[in-house]
Length: 506
Image (tube, rainbow, N blue to C red; front, side, top):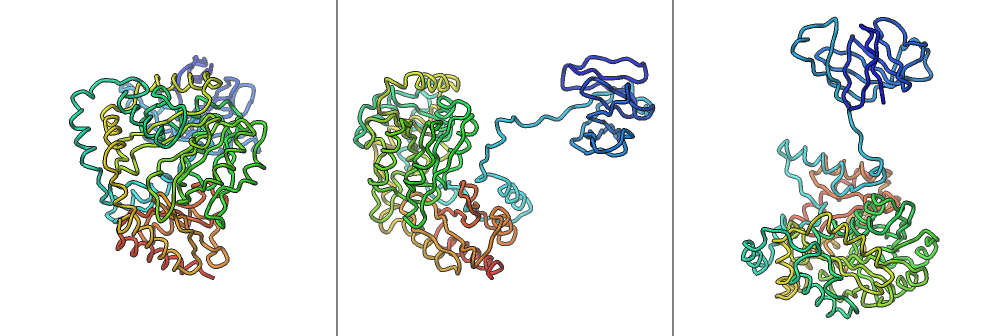
């Protein structure tokens, strides 16, 4: 409990809430409940206060923290926040004695100290400000197909509309039976063994399910192997759940495939799980069978849970073939994540799922944890659940976009060509997904702070990309662009990047 000293009547009052009742022109207080009014002298017992409220005009107070290096004369303080005072109407105009309410400020939870998602981070705020000022910003930062003219299949939209009258109440917390059955059959077709309807959980996008799966599994200090670069939600979800993300490197010189030796070196007794993102965001890598088998063997040797993010499994280019991780891991507990956002161009529907496969008899407690979290959020949005059966069982229009002369294929090709034409820039050809992850040679264009680089690019060229370190890549020498704009816009955008980099070249 904190007490507040009222110098006018010489007494202290208890304070239990986030509101302070004050009197006098300025009040300071000490952690041991010692208070004083600076206009009348020093604190009782001559103790220097920890916090100090300065009265300003208009009912505003500065709150400052005392500097222990200074003398007890209170000659200087370090500002820490502002507090606003609301005066009762009876005290209006009374300047000799202020009696009011000081609203204290609140800080974010310590649990968010290591949580970061810079894809929608500080640079995006600058982009929004520029848009408010009337600038047109070409956003190459988010894999959101709809703004670039990619429409959802009409049969999916019509099925959702048709089912709206029956979608007004909650569903089962795991999801609609028909939708879960369609997901189950999808994985049976992919040769995943032992997946039943009860092993399918529908969610408000894969993002929600990633957080749920981590919160149900991790204790404080547990380690999870996450690729570098990664989709940063994985790292954030581990940290938010009390775990420690440990990043294993993917090798740019080897098609951005994971470095198995680096994974092996980073496994410790605290390692609990391994994350696989295939096809990969941000690199566009599609992993070979040999790479997947090598990763799964390490998981097998160390009894790790496997999380496989396969949201881009249908967006493949050239001769790339996606192999479902769980189809190679019948003896491992594997959670496979997928959804409709990318392949079916309905990111706003927030329609995703988990399929749990492998030996579930020794994971009942963990699965009960997922059940608890699924029950707590009641259910995924029901109208979008009706899209799943139609999407998975209907015509796969994504093939019209990724096979010649499909728009996504053409845009991937042109993005890759244009980036590699910029002096000092190189880019591994993406074999899947919707992104390119080019490298800027530090010998040609020395960039020490890649967040500043993308901010300067935004301010100069009105073009929004994402810095490589936002994907937990350890060096400031990469950035990510989406390949969703039409070819003419891509040519214009990448041309601007090339012109901007001229200022960095040595």
